[in-house]
Image 1 (cartoon, rainbow, N blue to C red):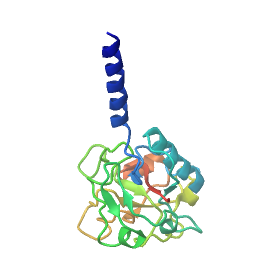
Image 2: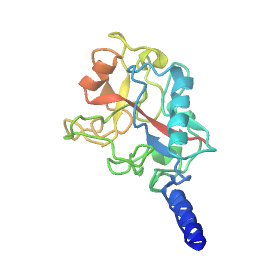
Image 3: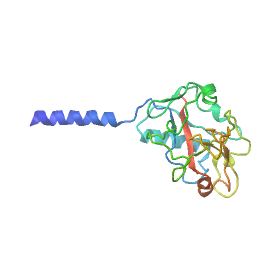
Image 4: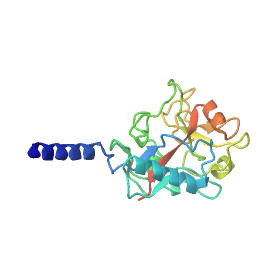
Length: 208
């Protein structure tokens, strides 16, 4: 009986380890936003949200940065040098240049949240593919389109969003852009973001 209990305990311990998140994850889409639209508590609040979600998923020891631009910050300069992989170990990009080029591997199937789940996109209900970035296609800041540097949640302001599934209303570059598809409409509130196919989600990258 004693031998059986020891074996059972070891089996459970091994199973627990297997269920833990792969600590190599260095990129994800947040599974949830702040709940206050584009008010993320500024860049610091957004970074803290990334870190909390990663920690809850079992990934620790990394410095997380939200892929967001502000009035004096370019998103591309916040996220480290790469490479980055998702929760399943699939490479997203080798470096900042390839991330913002045609060779990145961001698709609906790879732009996973911290739990390794696919984000609802165009054709799903609800559509959540609008990802907050406040950025131009090259990762530089889109002036005046960051919802007050991520502190606004009302009917005023706007923010540039990208499409995590690389799909839009047409085949234009903007519609297929992961980081710079269009501006939010109707303000920076949760309702406004949801109205165009979003949910206040954003990208997180490990900067180390």
